[in-house]
Image (tube, rainbow over all chains, first blue to last red; front, side, top):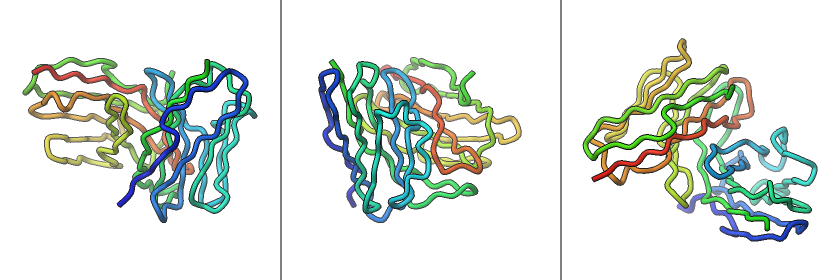
Amino acid sequence: GAGVSQSPRYKVAKRGQDVALRCDPISGHVSLFWYQQALGQGPEFLTYFQNEAQLDKSGLPSDRFFAERPEGSVSTLKIQRTQQEDSAVYLCASSEQTSGVFSYEQYFGPGTRLTVT
Amino acid sequence: KNEVEQSPQNLTAQEGEFITINCSYSVGISALHWLQQHPGGGIVSLFMLSSGKKKHGRLIATINIQEKHSSLHITASHPRDSAVYICAVSPSGNTGKLIFGQGTTLQVKP
């Protein structure tokens, strides 16, 4: 079956431009996560959805970052007025379910490499 | 201090060697994940464990909850094992988000 897909795979933006990154999770997966991975670093949590509800956005670095998942499937991460420090790989992951007691395996997309010039 | 620490950061081995990558964490967890990332590629989950030991092919993962420590072992290493190996934890009582270590870059030479 299809895995998690992300588009575009690569994005070059000029400083100040707005960008939108798309994530298509595995069909039926309830939970969706966005992570940011700077060069040479481990990923860092940005935000989490359970169906269409954004339950945790504590990792979003500024109010320029906005994420949505209006129908509980596809998600979009939007970055307004991009800055050079936004350059990173943006990873999306989905899982069947989540709870505070049990963990479920997360399936990652290939990522979108964003370069802000 | 990071909540998840891995060692070593970089590792070079000769083909056939036994490899160990270590992970220590400082938070309560519901599970620990070992992930593999190839250059330019996505992340693949290798193991998710909350106790004991798991084995898949030449890979073995162990966890000691009391000591908050996990190890990933690769037996009979092969050049195709060259990748970044990342340890991540699911904090207990949380939404399922992962906290990642900084990764261990492994190069296996033929």
